[in-house]
Length: 150
Image (cartoon, rainbow, N blue to C red; front, side, top):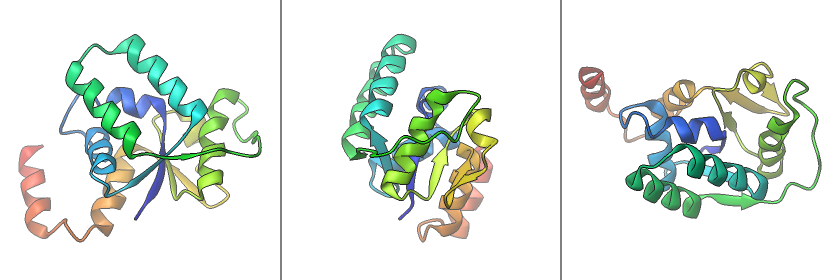
């Protein structure tokens, strides 16, 4: 099972389109098909931004389910991998602490890293493609029906 850290911008974007890769990743985490990693600092930022920017009660419910499904880690060391926006380092720290496979983000500062200590840093669309390629559930039929919906 893939172990991922999800950037706050991805969670916020997930409310906009239920057919998006972002929303599908969040639902897959809630359903236990992908392991989402979170730290205290990430969760606090997520909650703050979600409360500030969103007012959709269904999405709030989904976020509660998401947070309950997350594996929480406590990073023991500070990492300075992102110079342009040092606050983004909390995602790298959580990824290292959890031995994550991916950091999923739309943030160019993180994406510019491409990889850190074996953790690939990718967009939601790239993550969804990785998941679909590796998933036993994604038969040719599902790929075909997904293509019809787009």
